[in-house]
Image 1 (cartoon, rainbow, N blue to C red):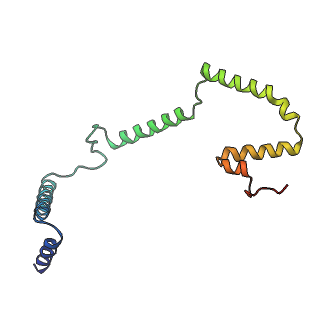
Image 2: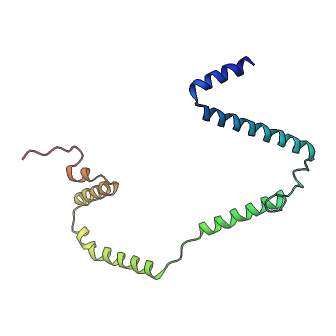
Image 3: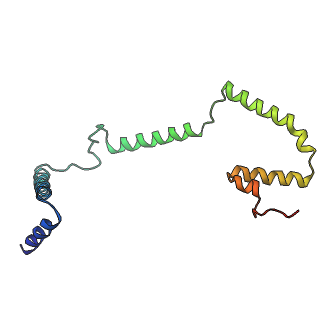
Length: 144
């Protein structure tokens, strides 16, 4: 009882009258639903879990479990399959290979050191740091 008086006093400081009334109303609803749930639970016997059907689909737990396993297996098979090669995709790949083949002579003319530098520049560009490609690692200008 003392706790209830202190609680009401603190609530009157923190909350306005409408908010306190709403809180009391929610408490009463919660208590009423708990009483109804307790009455319903006492009135109805609970059947065994293995024989009780799923309330949504009407299937037993074993049937539901098997359905889930089958769904997972088919999803894995579907995801594991390679995508089909469409005509547009094949043409794009063919075109990229032709361009690469036509530009190979440029790379063959480079020395091994130049190829390494070019590879490093390409990797830095792919990482998305354009400043590292332009300024280099130190960012300082060389004296000439």
